[in-house]
Image 1 (cartoon, rainbow, N blue to C red):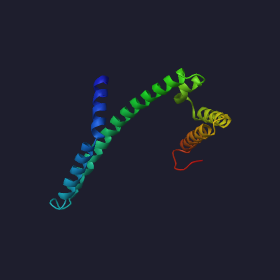
Image 2: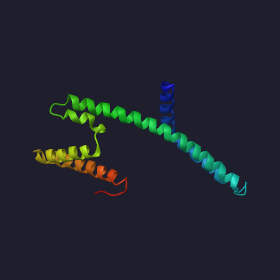
Image 3: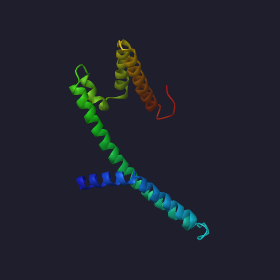
Image 4: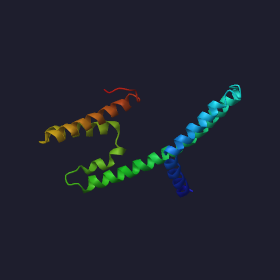
Length: 150
C-alpha cells in the first residue's frame, strides 16, 4: 500500500504541477463562470464550484505534503553526505533537523563567528548573510510565523 501511494503521489504531483493541469483547472473555472447566467447564478451553481475546489484542495494537501516530505528527506541525505565527506566540516550538523530552535540559534551564532573570522571577504560576507537569514527565520518561527524579521 505504501509503495502504491508513493507512486501515485509522485505521479499526481508531477501531473498537477504541469501547465496542462493549470489549463484544465482554468478551463473548468471558465466553463463554470460562463454557465452562471444559464443557472441564474443559483446557490446550487455556486455550491458546485465550492464543493469541487474544497475536495480537490483537501486531497492535494496530502499529496503535496507527501512529496515535500520525500524531497526534504532526499535533500537532507545529500547535504549529510557532503558534510560527512567534506574535510573540516562539522559532522554534528548532520543532525541539525533534530535540534531545538535554541540549539539552532547557537549553531547560527557560531557560524556567524566563523564567517567573520574567514580571510576571504566575499565568502565571509555570504556565510554571514546566510547565517543572518537562518537566524531571522528562527526568530520568525518563535513569534508564531508572523511576518517580518527580528
